[in-house]
Image (cartoon, rainbow, N blue to C red):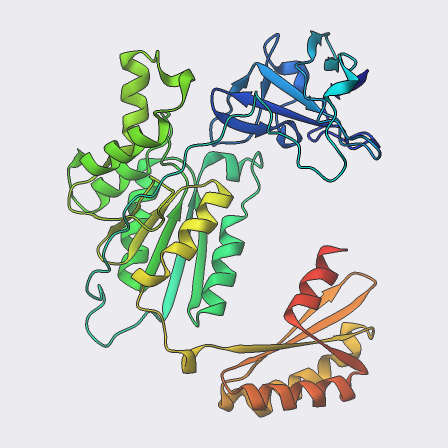
Length: 400
């Protein structure tokens, strides 16, 4: 018998040494119990909540697969579900018939419970004319992160960091990141101000179906446009969720809430940037692009928007060289001050970023790659450091 127990308040399921894995299905949607974000002891009896979508879904069917070493049987069974005040546990019965095993090396048959997800191939939007005007490209950007959950610490903002890296890699000077609450007055003021000042502005968050998702209506007010349901977005939304059995018996009130996600400012551009995503990027004033707050979806959509953006030419994109030293920051500060004064007119920026009791990363940024590489070698000699690639720096910082 294989047994998996989910104990609150842990957020992730630690798999046993046998690599037994738990898979849950709801309708035709395949969900992994490893993605649990809601403590198991707060779920209704007989269900779990997962983070497979922006809105947690109750899951009521489970399949347990044994992939331990030496096992040749898929051993897919429906486990018994029991609950207590502190845990929800699933137990799979012993294999009913050993003769059902497959030969070594042969591929196991798919689980009967895990049906295939439908595949979508929505048409992409055609690329419109340059919204900034012929021959112009994006030079500056700003990000507007919307959500009470960010400000009260409930949710960690990953989107602004991803957008900052996106801007750097594409030669855009990200000038400002603002976090504001789900309040119409705040959104209206910030949106108007940022659009007047910067070439490219994004918002993230506040476009779901609940009462506090007010980004679209606030932006409509900011730019004096009525709200209208977008017919093509409603059609794509309907196609995307048609297989969802849990939505088949929704009330009129629930349907209206869902359709709020397709209620856009009437004169906005609606850009479909991925063949498998029904959510469009809504663009206003040729500058302000509206994105969801879900990090993975945000990242997909930011990357998908590239063909629709007048990005800087490669010659305008910066190059960064990092140098790491074990010396304290105070020891290298005089040299870095002199270096910055020497290279400032060449458009080179010098920065230092200490790690507590570890050392210092020195960053050199400029558009002349050969010049930056030569400066990197000089800095490494002067501060007794070593050159570090972007990937190495990312891994080293993540390990701290």
